[in-house]
Length: 315
Figure (cartoon, rainbow, N blue to C red):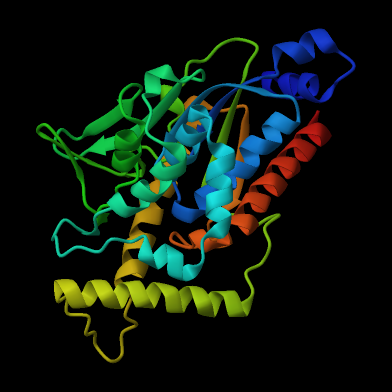
């Protein structure tokens, strides 16, 4: 029996309180992935319901948003707010700008969140938290472990060319997923604790609810609306040869970004080897489909349950 299987057997064996107590502590890593990151909420809730204590959280992009709000103590309020969002609400939260660095300022959504979360200092959290951003000026990761929560989250989720970068001194900060979509390297590892990683960019659709045809049509229409808006304000020539399939701006960006994140995620998992990886299919939800909160949170719950069931079979 390898170390991983031994840990999982102890987690699942409630009849052994000594070994079970030792592995009830979890260090949690939440990956980037836009609206799919709402599934992180379902995983966090499932961990707590199964008696785990989350000792530390690290996150990138949407993983940083969910993780930071959880560590601040406002995950329930955030979840309820997400449940209220409609497609129109999501569109209204995108404060468009004519800047060539990005067509969304990203301030409106944080002002809305601040009404029920407030801003807080990361170093005051009872649960240690790290948000990962990418410094494109100095070409390195930036780890926020102190200071303003919203400043850290705004930098961590600044998707290049979509959200304006955050300027911090001589640095320009963008989405943490650019360099580290699953930041396993920032955790403090301790014996007798589980490292749990949540990857919301998985290629596998196993265990995921198939997206219905009507939902696909709605998603395509929604992204076309955003794509058209950006093309107009930046006057981008979107003409293509008649015999060549033309990818819209969002499709081109997302497909390119997906490839990069896939490779980086695989590398992080290979190098840092978490005990448990909870995979959420990339097909489960579009990057900007935040109006699907209830569905994605439940997807996170089901994915966690599936992983634990598989681990039980292997042990």
